[in-house]
Length: 179
View 1: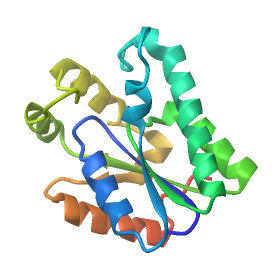
View 2: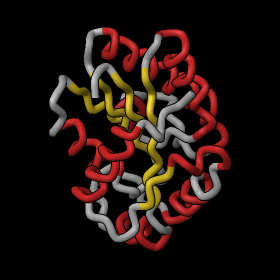
View 3: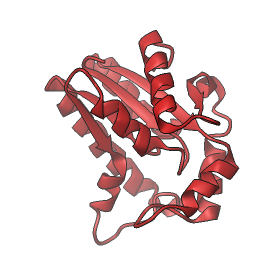
């Protein structure tokens, strides 16, 4: 990776943060692991759970802030691994980053089966999303990605280290880049 943006996304409990941490931590060039959850957690008064319909405007602002941070880091020479729920509905902002600022942006969707995601969520601690209905709904949102189905990395049966190896492979091949 060199001056690139790698979006590691998928439903809750897909392993995004673990894999993104591995990817960024073992990179051979300066790399930032940008956890989108931190942007949401920074909102004090007025926070709305991002999966609720009334959070649309909040989510738009948060994604705008994320893309702005990514642009600054990449302009400074860092690769950036964006870790979070970045559905296709927020890709126009990242495509603008690619087109207007000449950044290479790859989009990789980690997609375990629903049972695996729900099992992993039961093990979560702290502020991580554990709501089974919300996880099921977000899993459905990543179930049929149309033209972006080619950007899915099926993680069934893979541990985090194996998933990171597979992710590096698709990045090297350039198959998951946004046009």
